[in-house]
Length: 90
Length: 170
Image (cartoon, rainbow over all chains, first blue to last red; front, side, top):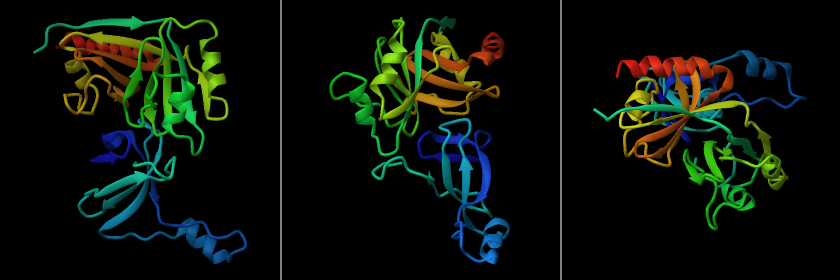
């Protein structure tokens, strides 16, 4: 499998580290315990498109949000998790 | 088939790792470092500049500034010029840089690197931060037939072993 890094281009999966689902958002500190439990532990296991965090450890050393199809491994898009500047094309 | 290969080592380089602060663009970095007028630090995996000062793109907002035959104060000057714009660290002693030249240079590298090194995907001016034989490398194409490959100094011997072993089978 290859991942299209927005900076480096198409790269072998061995250059990356997988972190997991990119969609959970940390709840407010004063939120309910149940919300924090869900944020830390509960994950969906979808068939089809999934947004994931990957770290390009052997390349540009940036966190990416990669959209991957869990059935076909097709990767329609990948972007920097935290663009450096608002106007950055990548 | 190419026409030979020469492996040498580039020594005495000045190298400074540069990471732009939030919101600082490539133009500002190039301008502050006094690249040729209008020449920005590359925002893509490429390098610009010359022997006196080159900027090698290693990631979004990060570069390796490089100078051949730097003065004793060179790294300190670069760091001072970038004050407020970027975090900069003197890494001159951190890398060993191997120069591969000849028609077989690209062929040799292509045996180790899982990136497309053929023109036009990769050309003079291109840079790739990747891995060869489990060793992190920065590949920089200089002209049609020569490349610089930088590796962390402690892995230099291991990388040189890979170079010579792989070159023997060309």
